Image (cartoon, rainbow over all chains, first blue to last red; front, side, top):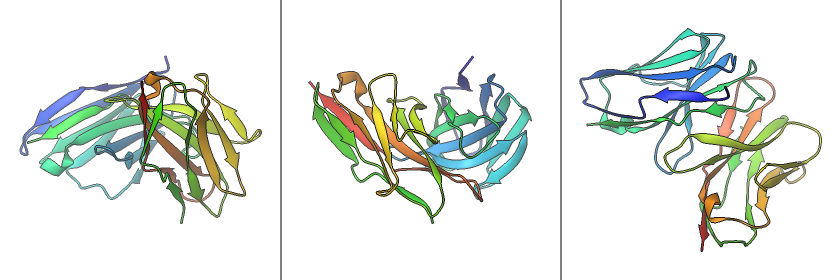
Length: 114
Length: 114
């Protein structure tokens, strides 16, 4: 299995809602990532987990809360988001090294905040 | 500081014509280089990578890229494009030492015309 899956594919939420994005991989990768991608822009790194521990937080607002329950799963909990948080949220994974390995991306969750 | 530059934001080309998408990087340390492709409403897929060895790398669908250390470039080429190659192409650089860095370029939209 060389796939990264993400659910849901689309999500519409209000500014007062609480929702979660889910990401799963079964390639035995030990590094997992969350990216935010606005239209016609490159992905922006949000968080990196290495061996289920948060190793990088790129100064992301606290309304985004990541969680890595085990080596195969990665969640992104959303609360009190703003309309400008509307974007494609991509999950990725790679082998043990954070540096020189290719990243495998999921198809993304298209988030719209009303 | 490290950076990745993709000067061409859009490249229109007729079907069966050759194409070159340019990528230049700036780094004082060794790097690994990647090209990713993103089809509409999808995640990123690795197209090819340079880690070490031969400076010319090829993908299974006819793309190739050449690492040129003196010109700090990693341009992507294809001798004959198809309509299905229409997509966004991102060059990425990972830094091999020190703090984790995985930097994406701003992307080049390849539009293949019939």
